[in-house]
Length: 264
Image 1 (tube, rainbow, N blue to C red):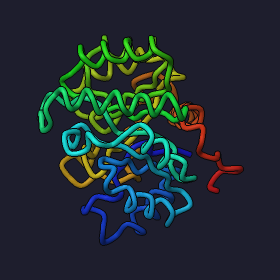
Image 2 (spheres, rainbow, N blue to C red):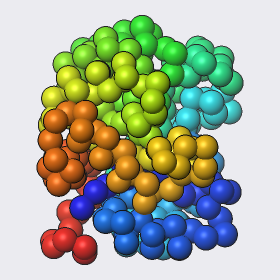
Image 3 (cartoon, rainbow, N blue to C red):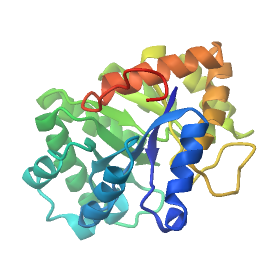
Protein backbone atom coordinates (compact mmCIF):
# COMPACT_ATOMS: atom_id res chain seq x y z
CA UNK A 1 0.00 0.00 0.00
CA UNK A 2 1.00 3.58 -0.71
CA UNK A 3 -0.39 6.75 0.83
CA UNK A 4 -0.90 10.16 -0.76
CA UNK A 5 -0.08 12.37 2.19
CA UNK A 6 -1.08 15.60 0.43
CA UNK A 7 -3.69 16.32 -2.23
CA UNK A 8 -6.47 18.85 -2.76
CA UNK A 9 -9.62 16.94 -3.60
CA UNK A 10 -11.76 20.01 -2.87
CA UNK A 11 -10.27 21.97 -5.77
CA UNK A 12 -12.52 22.66 -8.78
CA UNK A 13 -10.26 20.50 -10.98
CA UNK A 14 -11.79 17.41 -9.37
CA UNK A 15 -15.38 18.52 -8.82
CA UNK A 16 -16.99 16.55 -11.64
CA UNK A 17 -15.23 13.21 -11.08
CA UNK A 18 -14.10 13.07 -7.47
CA UNK A 19 -15.46 9.56 -6.90
CA UNK A 20 -13.73 8.27 -10.03
CA UNK A 21 -10.43 9.83 -8.93
CA UNK A 22 -10.63 8.15 -5.54
CA UNK A 23 -11.51 4.85 -7.22
CA UNK A 24 -8.50 5.11 -9.55
CA UNK A 25 -6.25 5.79 -6.57
CA UNK A 26 -7.52 2.72 -4.75
CA UNK A 27 -7.05 0.62 -7.89
CA UNK A 28 -3.44 1.84 -8.04
CA UNK A 29 -2.80 0.70 -4.46
CA UNK A 30 -3.16 4.11 -2.81
CA UNK A 31 -4.92 3.09 0.37
CA UNK A 32 -5.20 6.44 2.11
CA UNK A 33 -5.38 10.07 0.94
CA UNK A 34 -5.24 13.30 2.94
CA UNK A 35 -7.02 16.24 1.33
CA UNK A 36 -5.33 19.33 2.64
CA UNK A 37 -7.01 22.55 3.74
CA UNK A 38 -5.86 25.86 2.30
CA UNK A 39 -8.58 28.02 3.83
CA UNK A 40 -10.36 27.55 7.16
CA UNK A 41 -13.44 29.26 5.74
CA UNK A 42 -13.79 26.30 3.35
CA UNK A 43 -13.36 23.69 6.06
CA UNK A 44 -16.93 22.42 5.88
CA UNK A 45 -16.55 21.55 2.20
CA UNK A 46 -13.25 19.79 2.87
CA UNK A 47 -14.54 17.73 5.76
CA UNK A 48 -17.63 16.72 3.77
CA UNK A 49 -15.35 15.25 1.10
CA UNK A 50 -13.44 13.32 3.76
CA UNK A 51 -16.70 12.05 5.21
CA UNK A 52 -17.78 10.80 1.77
CA UNK A 53 -14.91 8.31 1.38
CA UNK A 54 -13.60 5.84 3.95
CA UNK A 55 -10.07 6.19 2.56
CA UNK A 56 -9.94 10.02 2.60
CA UNK A 57 -9.01 12.15 5.61
CA UNK A 58 -8.29 15.87 5.84
CA UNK A 59 -6.53 18.72 7.61
CA UNK A 60 -7.59 22.15 8.82
CA UNK A 61 -5.57 25.29 8.20
CA UNK A 62 -4.66 28.33 6.14
CA UNK A 63 -2.21 28.33 3.25
CA UNK A 64 0.31 31.20 3.40
CA UNK A 65 -1.26 32.66 0.23
CA UNK A 66 -4.43 33.21 2.28
CA UNK A 67 -2.73 34.28 5.50
CA UNK A 68 -3.80 37.93 5.36
CA UNK A 69 -7.44 36.92 4.84
CA UNK A 70 -7.46 34.63 7.86
CA UNK A 71 -5.43 36.38 10.51
CA UNK A 72 -8.52 36.12 12.71
CA UNK A 73 -8.19 32.33 12.82
CA UNK A 74 -7.16 31.43 16.37
CA UNK A 75 -5.35 28.54 17.96
CA UNK A 76 -8.55 27.68 19.78
CA UNK A 77 -10.51 27.59 16.52
CA UNK A 78 -8.00 25.27 14.87
CA UNK A 79 -7.94 23.02 17.91
CA UNK A 80 -11.71 22.89 18.01
CA UNK A 81 -12.12 22.03 14.32
CA UNK A 82 -9.37 19.44 14.53
CA UNK A 83 -11.48 17.42 16.97
CA UNK A 84 -13.49 16.09 14.04
CA UNK A 85 -12.64 12.38 13.61
CA UNK A 86 -11.64 12.85 9.99
CA UNK A 87 -9.14 15.65 10.71
CA UNK A 88 -5.65 14.20 11.07
CA UNK A 89 -3.40 17.24 10.58
CA UNK A 90 -3.05 21.01 10.96
CA UNK A 91 -2.28 23.15 7.91
CA UNK A 92 -1.07 23.63 5.37
CA UNK A 93 0.62 26.71 6.70
CA UNK A 94 4.02 28.25 6.28
CA UNK A 95 5.92 30.75 4.17
CA UNK A 96 5.82 31.43 0.44
CA UNK A 97 8.23 34.17 -0.62
CA UNK A 98 8.11 33.12 -4.28
CA UNK A 99 4.62 34.49 -4.94
CA UNK A 100 4.28 36.74 -1.86
CA UNK A 101 0.48 36.72 -2.22
CA UNK A 102 0.25 37.73 1.44
CA UNK A 103 2.50 40.13 3.39
CA UNK A 104 5.36 38.25 4.97
CA UNK A 105 4.50 39.37 8.49
CA UNK A 106 1.00 37.96 8.01
CA UNK A 107 2.47 34.67 6.80
CA UNK A 108 4.72 34.46 9.85
CA UNK A 109 1.89 35.30 12.23
CA UNK A 110 -0.39 32.67 10.69
CA UNK A 111 2.38 30.11 10.67
CA UNK A 112 3.11 30.53 14.36
CA UNK A 113 -0.61 30.22 15.14
CA UNK A 114 -0.70 26.89 13.33
CA UNK A 115 2.45 25.72 15.12
CA UNK A 116 0.77 26.41 18.45
CA UNK A 117 -2.26 24.39 17.35
CA UNK A 118 -0.07 21.48 16.27
CA UNK A 119 1.79 21.58 19.57
CA UNK A 120 -1.47 21.62 21.54
CA UNK A 121 -3.22 18.85 19.59
CA UNK A 122 -0.23 16.65 18.80
CA UNK A 123 -1.39 16.54 15.19
CA UNK A 124 1.28 16.99 12.52
CA UNK A 125 1.69 20.44 10.99
CA UNK A 126 1.77 20.33 7.19
CA UNK A 127 4.34 22.97 6.25
CA UNK A 128 4.47 24.85 2.95
CA UNK A 129 7.85 26.50 2.35
CA UNK A 130 8.95 28.12 -0.88
CA UNK A 131 11.91 30.46 -1.32
CA UNK A 132 11.93 31.04 2.44
CA UNK A 133 14.55 28.57 3.64
CA UNK A 134 16.36 30.81 6.11
CA UNK A 135 13.27 32.24 7.81
CA UNK A 136 11.62 28.82 7.86
CA UNK A 137 14.63 27.20 9.54
CA UNK A 138 14.86 30.03 12.08
CA UNK A 139 11.16 29.81 13.00
CA UNK A 140 11.25 26.02 13.29
CA UNK A 141 14.26 26.20 15.61
CA UNK A 142 12.71 29.01 17.65
CA UNK A 143 9.33 27.33 18.01
CA UNK A 144 10.78 23.90 18.78
CA UNK A 145 12.66 25.59 21.59
CA UNK A 146 9.28 26.52 23.10
CA UNK A 147 8.09 22.92 22.88
CA UNK A 148 8.34 20.21 20.25
CA UNK A 149 5.57 19.65 17.70
CA UNK A 150 5.22 17.11 14.87
CA UNK A 151 5.60 18.43 11.34
CA UNK A 152 6.16 17.58 7.71
CA UNK A 153 7.98 19.67 5.12
CA UNK A 154 5.55 18.99 2.30
CA UNK A 155 6.35 18.99 -1.43
CA UNK A 156 10.00 19.50 -0.55
CA UNK A 157 11.93 21.54 -3.12
CA UNK A 158 14.09 23.62 -0.82
CA UNK A 159 17.81 23.50 -0.09
CA UNK A 160 19.78 20.90 1.82
CA UNK A 161 20.07 22.96 5.01
CA UNK A 162 16.31 23.16 5.51
CA UNK A 163 15.99 19.40 5.06
CA UNK A 164 18.74 18.85 7.62
CA UNK A 165 17.21 21.30 10.10
CA UNK A 166 13.79 19.70 9.66
CA UNK A 167 15.10 16.21 10.29
CA UNK A 168 17.23 17.35 13.24
CA UNK A 169 14.11 18.85 14.86
CA UNK A 170 12.16 15.63 14.43
CA UNK A 171 10.33 16.49 11.22
CA UNK A 172 9.52 14.47 8.14
CA UNK A 173 10.25 15.34 4.50
CA UNK A 174 7.73 14.62 1.75
CA UNK A 175 8.53 14.46 -1.95
CA UNK A 176 6.17 15.14 -4.82
CA UNK A 177 6.34 14.70 -8.58
CA UNK A 178 9.09 17.33 -8.70
CA UNK A 179 11.45 14.54 -7.65
CA UNK A 180 10.88 12.82 -11.01
CA UNK A 181 11.72 15.83 -13.17
CA UNK A 182 14.92 15.62 -15.21
CA UNK A 183 16.25 18.89 -13.79
CA UNK A 184 15.80 17.73 -10.17
CA UNK A 185 19.18 16.02 -9.71
CA UNK A 186 20.02 18.23 -6.72
CA UNK A 187 16.69 17.43 -5.09
CA UNK A 188 17.25 13.71 -5.60
CA UNK A 189 20.67 14.06 -3.98
CA UNK A 190 19.00 15.63 -0.93
CA UNK A 191 16.35 12.89 -0.85
CA UNK A 192 19.05 10.23 -0.92
CA UNK A 193 20.42 11.57 2.37
CA UNK A 194 17.13 11.88 4.27
CA UNK A 195 16.89 9.07 6.84
CA UNK A 196 14.52 6.39 5.60
CA UNK A 197 12.32 6.75 8.66
CA UNK A 198 11.56 10.38 7.75
CA UNK A 199 10.52 9.95 4.11
CA UNK A 200 7.03 10.48 2.74
CA UNK A 201 5.49 10.76 -0.73
CA UNK A 202 2.63 12.89 -2.01
CA UNK A 203 1.08 14.29 -5.16
CA UNK A 204 0.01 17.84 -4.21
CA UNK A 205 -2.68 17.10 -6.80
CA UNK A 206 -3.92 18.68 -8.97
CA UNK A 207 -0.43 20.21 -9.30
CA UNK A 208 3.02 18.85 -10.18
CA UNK A 209 2.17 15.61 -11.95
CA UNK A 210 5.20 13.29 -12.07
CA UNK A 211 6.79 12.04 -15.23
CA UNK A 212 5.26 10.58 -17.45
CA UNK A 213 2.26 12.85 -16.75
CA UNK A 214 4.13 16.14 -16.36
CA UNK A 215 2.08 19.06 -17.58
CA UNK A 216 -1.21 17.26 -17.07
CA UNK A 217 -3.58 17.39 -14.12
CA UNK A 218 -2.18 15.39 -11.23
CA UNK A 219 -4.24 12.94 -9.14
CA UNK A 220 -3.57 10.66 -6.16
CA UNK A 221 -3.09 7.51 -8.27
CA UNK A 222 0.09 9.05 -9.68
CA UNK A 223 1.90 8.99 -6.34
CA UNK A 224 3.13 5.53 -7.36
CA UNK A 225 5.37 7.13 -9.99
CA UNK A 226 6.99 9.42 -7.44
CA UNK A 227 7.46 6.48 -5.08
CA UNK A 228 9.22 4.54 -7.86
CA UNK A 229 11.75 7.33 -8.40
CA UNK A 230 12.22 7.77 -4.65
CA UNK A 231 12.97 4.05 -4.35
CA UNK A 232 15.60 4.32 -7.09
CA UNK A 233 17.03 7.44 -5.45
CA UNK A 234 17.50 5.90 -2.01
CA UNK A 235 18.53 2.48 -3.36
CA UNK A 236 15.71 0.23 -2.20
CA UNK A 237 12.93 -1.63 -3.99
CA UNK A 238 9.50 -0.24 -4.79
CA UNK A 239 8.00 -2.70 -2.33
CA UNK A 240 10.34 -1.46 0.38
CA UNK A 241 9.67 2.21 -0.31
CA UNK A 242 5.94 1.55 -0.10
CA UNK A 243 6.38 -0.12 3.27
CA UNK A 244 8.76 2.56 4.58
CA UNK A 245 6.69 5.58 3.52
CA UNK A 246 3.44 4.01 4.68
CA UNK A 247 4.90 3.12 8.08
CA UNK A 248 6.26 6.65 8.38
CA UNK A 249 2.90 8.09 7.43
CA UNK A 250 0.97 6.25 10.14
CA UNK A 251 3.64 7.07 12.71
CA UNK A 252 3.28 10.79 11.93
CA UNK A 253 -0.45 10.92 11.22
CA UNK A 254 -1.15 8.93 14.34
CA UNK A 255 -4.81 9.91 14.63
CA UNK A 256 -5.62 8.03 11.42
CA UNK A 257 -6.52 4.38 12.00
CA UNK A 258 -4.27 2.01 10.16
CA UNK A 259 -6.00 -0.54 7.89
CA UNK A 260 -6.29 -3.92 9.54
CA UNK A 261 -5.43 -5.71 6.31
CA UNK A 262 -4.12 -4.74 2.85
CA UNK A 263 -6.76 -3.08 0.73
CA UNK A 264 -9.07 -2.24 3.65
